[in-house]
Amino acid sequence: TNQPSAATFSSNRQYSFGTGGIFVNPGNWDFWPAPGSPLIGAADAAHTPSNDFNGTSRQGPFDVGAYETESLTSNPGWPIQDSFKDNGIAADVIPPSPPTGLTLIELGL
Image 1 (cartoon, rainbow, N blue to C red):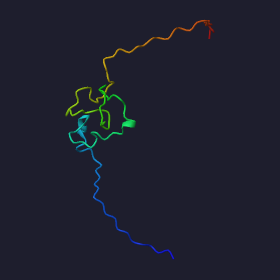
Image 2 (cartoon, helix red, strand yellow; image 1 turned 180 degrees about the vertical axis):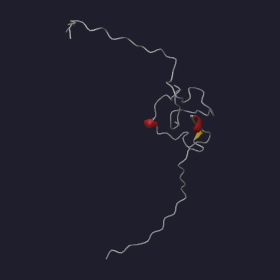
Image 3 (cartoon, helix red, strand yellow; image 1 turned 90 degrees about the horizontal axis):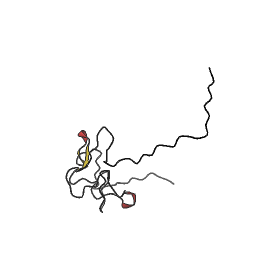
Image 4 (cartoon, rainbow, N blue to C red; image 1 turned 90 degrees about the vertical axis):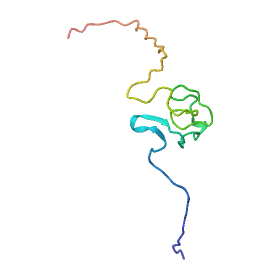
């Protein structure tokens, strides 16, 4: 017959769910990976964009997140802030052509 059995599991794995040691100063919006961060060199190359948030070309092994540290300890580019990012590249905006063949009819309402 089916009887419950006991099992004992042990593991040396530790899990952390905070941001301590991961980013330089997340309280001040500084999400640059801290030295020794587990994000450094841990990204899957199949899911990593070729450039980071600063436009820097990523070099393997890739870092997880918006930035590629490349042994730098601080963000040399644009930090996260409460505004749009200006990358210094002028937008190539061409306004649409006005419609043709339309007639304006005044309804007199």
